[in-house]
Length: 189
Image (tube, rainbow, N blue to C red):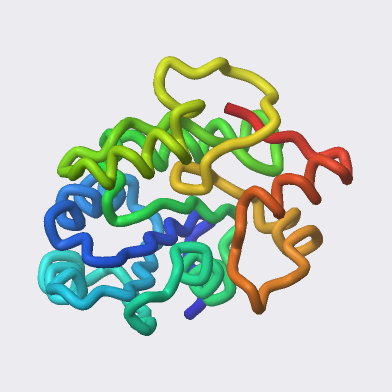
């Protein structure tokens, strides 16, 4: 699949039927290309196909990890910017347009944003959230930062093509960010 715009949003989904419609409604409002890479065993794909026919759907095996889903979506697009998230993320309506504008203005390799807790989370979801994302809770410090969460991050293709070297093992943002920073690239919150 080739992107037709300068921005593609890659949405990794794994059993996100409770949140995917609300998530994609906000994403679709900016008019960008949308690629949903789905490893669900529930009706997530059906909701996407029925309610968001403009979204490309790539089916992956249940149990695939989010970094593998992101990698598949990144590889299958050619847009100038790639914005990553998951089907559980409920962005504001101006989310992708704001990220795209910030990236173009700042000419940064990657722009990230805050992550709020799971809207429909169980205790286990909250435990994962606090373990992985507590440092990205709003309010966040603006400016150059050491790391951003891939679940709310925009990447410039130019750097992805150079510094994302091991495409066969998923897009693990922490490893990519380390290579990018080592080469002098900046992550901005």
